Length: 189
Image (tube, rainbow, N blue to C red; front, side, top):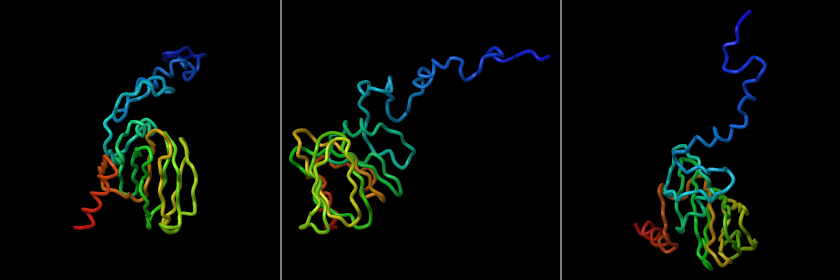
């Protein structure tokens, strides 16, 4: 006969012992990149995190909190070789700016606010128009001219995913005017 040397008795299953302490174990791990929610259900415990480009390193983030925290027109949060995520905050009555991406599709998701989505085959023929609200996703096919205008009464908070990346690593445009000035400089060089 062998004696039981395990820390639990032979009739108790190891996986059910202290099962109620799972939350304590789960919450004991803290991410080094973005603060963890203390209760995994409420975002009120979040602290301000520096928003910068974390790519191409592995990265986990509460994208809703990061998007709502962002106050710049556009900030790259993660830029890799084949994918980029940018955070955007569009002022009331302002828009992203009519643009087209010939070589890639684009995904946008609204976290706060509302806006008018416009798309079409040419910049003077935007035959697709639809209102979009918080939690809506917008899919922009390659080659489609598109714009998103804030029609609400608060900043429109959204994030955008490009594949491949559209902007340089570490891009920060504090205002829409900053973006215009930077692109004019690039075109004149």
